[in-house]
Length: 336
Ligand SMILES: NC(=O)c1ccc[n+]([C@@H]2O[C@H](COP(=O)([O-])OP(=O)(O)OC[C@H]3O[C@@H](n4cnc5c(N)ncnc54)[C@H](OP(=O)(O)O)[C@@H]3O)[C@@H](O)[C@H]2O)c1
Image 1 (cartoon, rainbow, N blue to C red):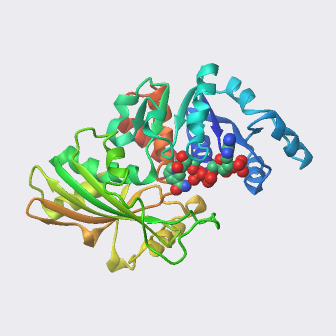
Image 2 (image 1 turned 90 degrees about the vertical axis):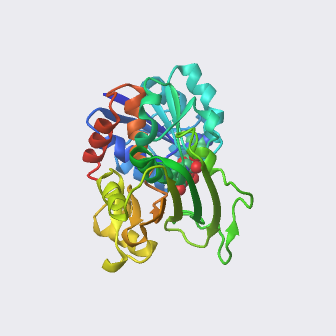
Image 3 (image 1 turned 135 degrees about the vertical axis):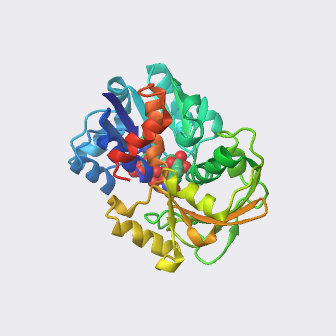
């Protein structure tokens, strides 16, 4: 059993903890919080040992009546790998500590690509990460792009890809960020960082991305145009997406006409927190004209990277060298 610690128990960290707990070959040895918030209460309720990020904060937890198991430093002595789910840029500051303790670490997409020695997407480059010590799982948007464009690349070859990303403002649990009433080019420059980030997984892919942020919390949405090397029909692309793990087709004709209905669909599936770990592609949007493929997809930013973190652990410890086997194992345990 691989012993996993989670540093940063927020949107991503709490989901990664739950996903690790479900796997047959790994276990959660503890989670780290800085403050005694409601999420710390949930960690205790979920029976995760709770650690403070430093000695000073241990006392704050004790003052609030929390049972606390020690500090991040103590947790690092007990785990084989730490999944760093702290807010962007903190992971890079934490890496020297992980190195000094000889503990492998996974970083998230909010970190610069150089924070890990290599970036990770299970379907894109599992083999590249075998045995590695410091790896970064790419962001939610990059994960979505790698899953669908990567599937097309594998089967038909991609000459070039052009994507517009319509990004959610904040996550649903965040009342402090906007925009409330504006559409914000973010970044205003082209390409956005997403295309270059896809290149950390598919180095030779010709991909350009531009991005805006809109006043919604539910999901990101991408409009994608791919020029293919080899011919495919619309029906063949639908079949490809249908048969690829972690991609689902949704239909406007069945009432799923927006990200709101996709999230309702996820809640109806009975997933914890109403998560949708898969990328949702609208069936009706898939259209091949000549050698160009068009489609529209939605990304549940809070959850699509979660199974990726699990596969990343398996690759780093070479629990299996076969990406498909790891993906199947993860998805079975998570009931996807
Ligand atoms: N949310 C998304 O849509 C999303 C999607 C994909 C990837 N990511 C990436 O995942 C990473 C985490 O993002 P998130 O959305 O989960 O952030 P988040 O919801 O803000 O959670 C981060 C957690 O880390 C804790 N924290 C803050 N400073 C810390 C420190 N020094 N040591 C330990 N814990 C600390 C915070 O809780 P306390 O301070 O209360 O303890 C907070 O709960 C980022 O790199 C982000 O870019 C996010």
